[in-house]
Length: 232
Ligand code: ATP
Image (cartoon, rainbow, N blue to C red; front, side):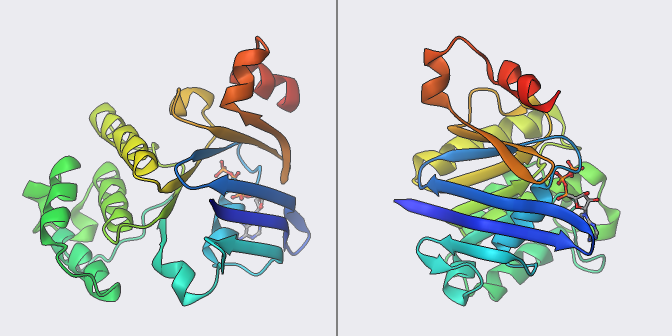
């Protein structure tokens, strides 16, 4: 079933054409990657999907208009730069999310997430007392707590240590295997390894190529070959 449908989305910031007629279709149980150099427009399309920006075109999430409350309830977003509350502790951030989403029976899952990302002994630390990597990990935990059915990660590996990267990759697989849809933006070709199903190569605001893993096997090219052919 189609979980995310982006149709002819164009976004301008004054004179800058950040997204130029973007189309994406991703089903549940699939991992999509937005791969492109700095400034290609990856963060912008993610923010359009999340409904944070005004744009031209249509975006549907599980058949719902992306800016509707019903759509927002099933969407998770982990921004490129964590945006935490300096005066809330790690645990209070999670409680805040739980209350905002009116979650029930979340305590065990909350603790499991914090444990998984090595934050159990940091529960009492305030947002502004966390290192960059710890902030990123808490941001991931906050994004996952409401158990979203589609999750958008904007450059999620930056600043994470190898242990956290490994854990995050397991999270991607678990989300996919449980029927969620995952969309990850990155400028590092190898960072998603074998994890992706569809890679959208983004160049100057456009989808320059759509690479399906199934099709890659047939022609003897790697994702890297295709990426450099298109972007160089
Ligand atoms: P990176 O890998 O560096 O994060 P990106 O692919 O996510 O890059 P975007 O952040 O979407 O790229 O930026 C796309 C284009 O839009 C760039 O030219 C950027 O300078 C421009 N842009 C982004 N945000 C704004 C803004 N708030 N105002 C004006 N221009 C912007």
